[in-house]
Image (tube, rainbow, N blue to C red; front, side):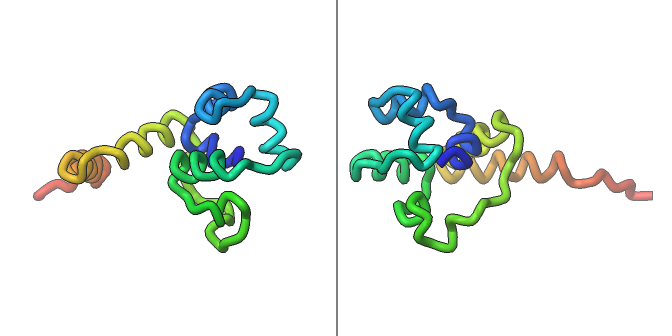
Amino acid sequence: MARLRKEKGITQVELAETLGITQPVVSEYERDGLSFRWDQLVTLARLFRVTADELLGLSREAAPRRGPRDTRLARLVGEVEALPRRDRDALVRTIEAYLRPKTSPW
C-alpha cells in the first residue's frame, strides 16, 4: 500500500483523512500490522485504480510497477489520466512533440 500511496503522491495523513482513520493506523496498515475493512479496501482500490486482489497481494499485478519516481510527476500523471479523453490525447500529443528530438531538414 505504501508504494501505491507514494506513486500517487499522497501522504499518510491525506490517506487517513480519505479513509476516516488516523495517520498512525495508516502506518500500521503499511507495516502489515492490521487488516483492511471491506469498505476501506473498496476505497483504496478505487483511489489507487487497482483491484482488491492487487491490494491483498493475490494477483501477479501486485509486483512493483515501474512508474515515476518523482511524486510530483506521479501526481500529475494521475491528474492527466483523469482528464476527458480528448483533453488527455491533446496533452499527450503535446508532450510527445516536445520530447521528440528536433531534426534539421538539412
